[in-house]
Amino acid sequence: MMEALPKVLEVDEKSPESKDLLPSQTASSLCISSRSESVWTTTPRSNWEIYRKPIVIMSVGGAILLFGVAITCLAYTLNLGEIKLKVLKMIGPAFLSLGLMMLVCGLVWVPIIKKKQKQRQKSMFFQTLKSFFLNR
Image (cartoon, rainbow, N blue to C red; front, side, top):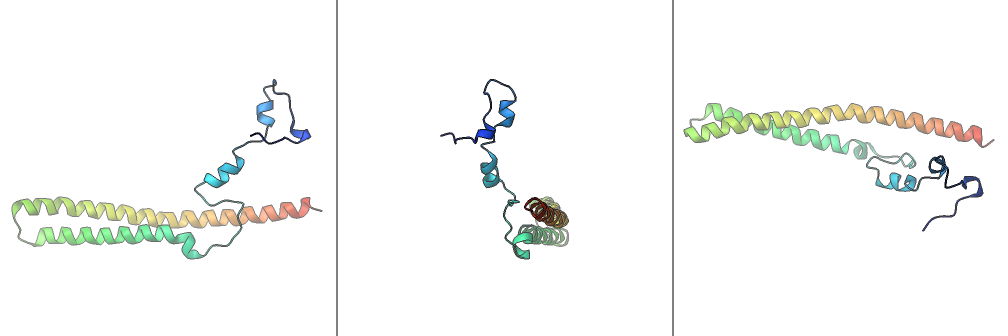
C-alpha cells in the first residue's frame, strides 16, 4: 500500500525526473537489513561488543596455528608408518597456514574497527553541530 506523499513531493509521473524525486521506499529497509551497525543508533557499546569478532578469529587462528605446529613437529620427530607420516606431513603445514591466515585476518581487523570508530565519532560530532546550527 503506497503512503500518501506530501504536497511538496508530488510530481508528474510522466517526467523522467519524477523517479529521482520520489522518496525511496528502501531507506528504512536499508537500515534494518544492513549488516553493519546503523548510523542512526547512538547507544554506546562496550569494547567486548566492538572487538568480539576479531578476538574470536585471532583466538581460533592461534589455536589452529599451534595445532599445526604440534602436528608438524610430531611428523618430523616420531617414527611412524610411511602412510601416517605422509598424512601428518601434509596436514601439519595445512593447519599451520590456515591458523596463520586466521590470526593475521584478526590482527588486521582491529585497526579497521578503530578507524571506523573514529569516523563514526566524527560523523556524530558533525551531526550534532549541524542540528545545533539548523535548529536556531
